[in-house]
Length: 366
Image (tube, rainbow, N blue to C red):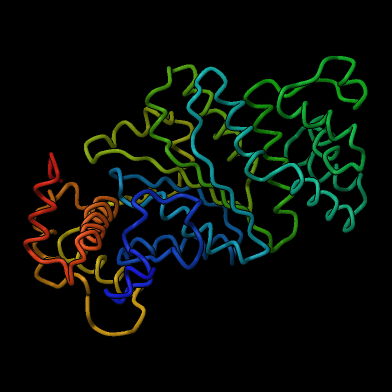
């Protein structure tokens, strides 16, 4: 921070080119510009939170357009709301076991202990047979409802077995110890088990669950059999969860690739999507607002300065970026590098000479 004091900045406003959980807290998450986009998400969350309406949303647009940032922004917004359980995962890359890996990613994010605590909490509100009936009515499988409730036990030996059941499967003798008939094997069975876990977090009328699945464009690297597994899993999950849940799919695709969305998802899953939200590139005016708002949000002292930039140099940089690349990710990359160069050179501001120096160091500009 000390280096940036000279520019009246508490930190580099553009430092996090690719959003991730290492920086994602409310202090770092500044929503700059993109007001119309934010309004769409606010409306979706209003429907979910105030009315409990299920929401299935596909976010799509070019790389660096802000989709991951949006997921982490709202993840952090909802952390302080004890009635919202938020889950963020990336589409697994391994094709042969992709339905299992989707299940594993979700389990890992929520955590075994959190699921256990939730079951134990619900057991204080109702008898166990009532909880079993609640889960069975949702997932249409008493077998998997029984397995889910075993997570809430107080035995380490049972914990070890149920963890193996969830992640690796059990042999016949181990299944018998838990009084279970079969492992979780098919795509539909995995969807039922996950739906049951999710339903623990939406039991109370005011409870909500939000699932973000990022990097869905990686479906293009899967063969048709494996992409069908993903589509079937998500379709079945959506059909089982008919209240108090929002599911967001993030796709990075160029404008001319939109027709591939239905192909990748399959018709059945595509028909269940209620909202398509496009993350467009900036126009020049919005790019300037975005940059200005990030700088203002990170000032130490409030003033009208855009230090170490000024309006002219910002306008010049925006002009030089190719229109199709004028995204939050690209803007952050260029402006962060310029700010670091200014610090390296101990410059008082970012002048046209310093900008030209930056250009000379970039092999293929923007």
